[in-house]
Length: 126
Image 1 (cartoon, helix red, strand yellow):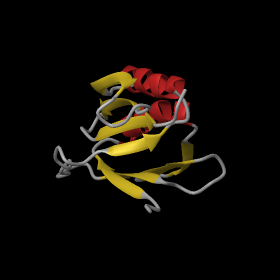
Image 2 (cartoon, rainbow, N blue to C red; image 1 turned 60 degrees about the vertical axis):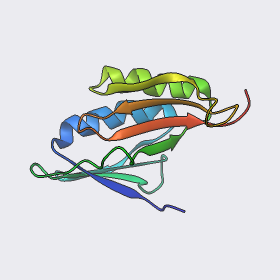
Image 3 (cartoon, rainbow, N blue to C red; image 1 turned 180 degrees about the vertical axis):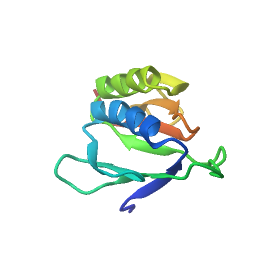
Image 4 (cartoon, one colour; image 1 turned 30 degrees about the horizontal axis):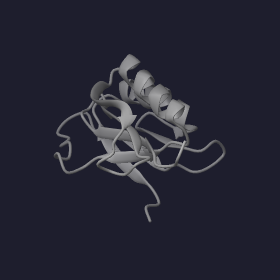
């Protein structure tokens, strides 16, 4: 349903460093960037997530908002979480099964450096 989404960020180099690391285990890369923005998607493709520099006055969406990114394996979810924490993210739910969401729902949750709620998830049997 969604074609792409963009976020405002206060510090583009900091945010890009975080997303470069956190998205790599999921197979996403920076597909373009300039001094005011960066876009992420699959190698050779268009952006699905864009970061837009807005140094002042950004409002992070409240608790009802989060971005769930598709992972293919539990290992990808684990590596996403570890990379996110190593690059300025905060833990918002460690990797693991979430039986309330389904018997195969395996996810990890982080807050990015600006406070956005980001999830990596796979929902397939092991």
